[in-house]
Length: 105
Image (cartoon, rainbow, N blue to C red):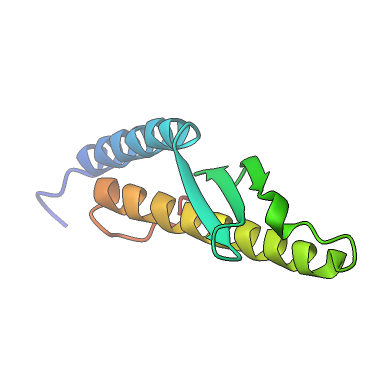
């Protein structure tokens, strides 16, 4: 097709990739939080799906019912990771203009 500068598109794609990779590094330092059991378990994760901390209120610890605490921790971890994925996708969509780029989001 006459008039199309493929080198221009390649340069733009490379710039976009660089911006996305830079933002991903920044997102590794940003955190999200999730709670379960009316706030008795709090999980903080960064935006590259790493758990940074888990806080458990004493009232969530029942030696006669360890399964309840396990469920609360599982729920809070899953919610934190879901929040993390959502935040990352939202932030990367700002850079890519909402275009889904395979292997990036």
